[in-house]
Image (spheres, rainbow, N blue to C red):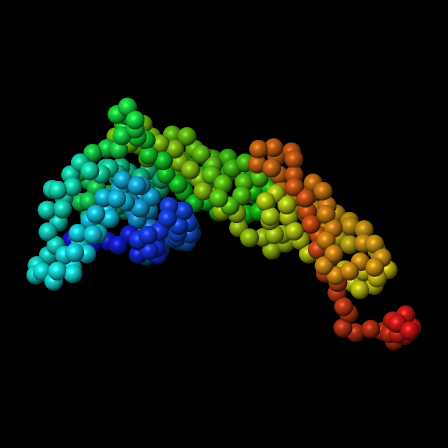
Length: 307
């Protein structure tokens, strides 16, 4: 049986922290997610590998059990002993020390897409964790298992709120994503996660990624946007059109406005997640456009103004 290096799968060192494991998983899961790679078998296999690695390394019990195996396997490699690694000895000595994983995790999220159902986890994974006891909560109750599903939305959807239709087994469910979510926000879908041995399903957590926007940069609930004005407006004063999430507004430019001056437009930013009626601010950064060509009259006026 081939040994699987789950740390290498996620591009991590064996000393990686919990946050580093989660960050690497989120990045790779979004990159290889089947919805982003339709009919791409290579991406689908990579997605399954990433999820399998995260199933192990994100759980302290399973990670410790896997690390013990890795230590034994490394010792065998260094020994130069002939023959194959004795997996049976390891399994026999480690029975009951770890946690069993519910193999329906990915299938419950994505159905049997592309044959993912029975082959969601590798033989290596099932051999290591398949015969072990169920994880327990305090009091001896089997622990329900939550799962995460990366979801990418636009900035406009984060502003207005949106929905996503997800597949849970053979069912479709429409999930509301509230206004004001940020990258890293989690939308909980109660009871939609994989079922544990107790027969009770855990929760599905939609892990939100807000895509970059060509017009705005987001900082918390505030937005920033560049505003172009010509040099004459900057010198003499005037008006400029400023884009917002709900349409353009007119900004008064006072005479003598300097390049990179920032004007704060209150209440034109993103909604607060817990209070959508309250919004952040929009910062308009003035970009002064210098004309490449001047009329003769404009040139004379500027030269006169300089003297």
